[in-house]
Image 1 (cartoon, rainbow, N blue to C red):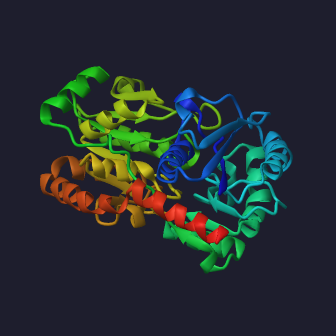
Image 2: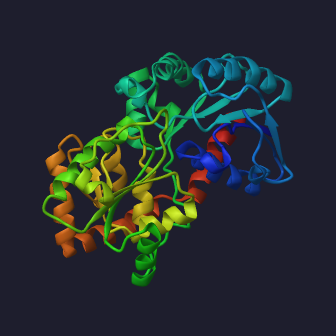
Length: 370
């Protein structure tokens, strides 16, 4: 069998959510099924770490998809031609986008529809492309995978897709996310440049991540608490954002940019609490990572977050700055609540496993060619 995969999200040192999802599934599929040929399509030179096995052919198709107009050229012209030439049995797109009008059976992973609900949070042309093409992708795909029941229902209601066409396959957690000892946590804080405990946020600096309100909440909380720091890990997704920070608190708020997984796992495990209050998500991978490191969680109560975190988080209205600040104070002072959330997280995280996810994706692929 010849299986094509859209791997344009594999960007070496710059990978975010889609890239990590693609990498975790692809490396498992290609190892588990050496009898099949996998053709991975990139939109720029392939980083050496993505060579995979001898049953994997990596192809670079230009131009790089750095603008929605280039998305159209890449998917609907260049990639379409390559797929037809390579005579694939099936094509899987981990970011949900693919050439329309091809005869090859298509499996598409659609992670969320944030652009349908908050188009103002995206650059104009990106929002245009997503709103124009994703309804067509959803209808044209032979089968859809999504990462939460919340997103499945959103796809059904937004695009009138039959429920039997959509399968929910939860994401997994990288095994590098593990709890740390007390001394190891102390060492991480020193490496960060301070000795005090800290709240942590991890995610792209995207408007829907609600970082403005998180900063406002921390500044409100910090008026009566003199030690805790706030660490924000993530890079701007579309463009740089400016954040208003009181000068007196500037030394207690640390923007760390993009951090590689090994270091990020340690920073997560050393946090006193993980604060994650986006107002829209498809899955919320950092929630599962926080559970794996046994870090107590404060989470927003919108979108899929209550589905993913279940009883392993203290929930707040992400639009209520005072509520976020009060949750920080509550979790800091309530040791019993910290323990309760950690224990619940240790059980909940068992539902998120990349090996299981890869097996289920493979089952979806097989069904399209049987």
